[in-house]
Length: 386
Image 1 (cartoon, rainbow, N blue to C red):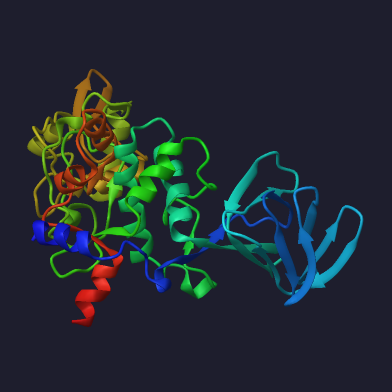
Image 2 (image 1 turned 90 degrees about the vertical axis):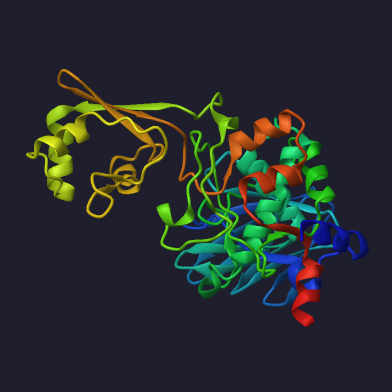
């Protein structure tokens, strides 16, 4: 089937269908500003208030937008442009970008494409109507940094594109599709630090990951799996046949492969007993809680049926991962941990290391996701139509 997918890719267009080209991304989600200044970084923008043409925003023009009395007050440095319930900024040509700065902050963020702004309880809801490949490149830089080989950026671009399209209804009730925070995907601004990020995005344009039924997969990834990835049901509720555990030695020497957490013996036993009813007075159970050294990922401390999930311990104690051993030295309990994150799907630091060693992006994706196919978006519509 993998060969068939590659063949199909070679004969079908790599253009993204119109319905998938634009994403509506809520910027500054959860911390919306009450006042911003905007300025064209590249090119110019048409500014509209309630659909009325207000001004052409050029590089030498600074626009202030402030939420006041349930409306948006718009002005330049020298002219009051009025108050409106909706303000739009539309680029005049392809590639134009806009700078946005929150009042009282030094950070300036630069974004591609078009914008829609509305008042929101004294704040400004800002929606970026962004071309998907501009968005993907921005997410890749935000999620993976700017110092990796291009082949890894291709990996991350395919994952980001798949995730975005598979979660386009996440914020539907709020009037947009995705936000810019980690629970969607981190999207700080346009990609600007490394040309290989944009090249990697363009060289995989339109390519997504699908399962055997040609459905977009849940393209899960974490920073470092600690040497073993997890089955999806070990962390979440559902079992997905492409998110299967596997040994992964590619990340063991990377930045987040090891961590340590130390507490006192009494605090540890009290936490297990009080929070989870763990039988600390039973000798065998107590010994297991104080001396535990798994040779691979396990999922519960105690019996498979009644034990405490390691994922719960991780959440409670804010640990880097749910993969750790337990050692007791006198009055100290030491959790020796491996990895960073939930451990399901692709291991970022492992994949980065594979890319540095010359593995192509498609082999890296097939290494971490079982029985998947890489196809262009047009293939999905082709199969569903037939």
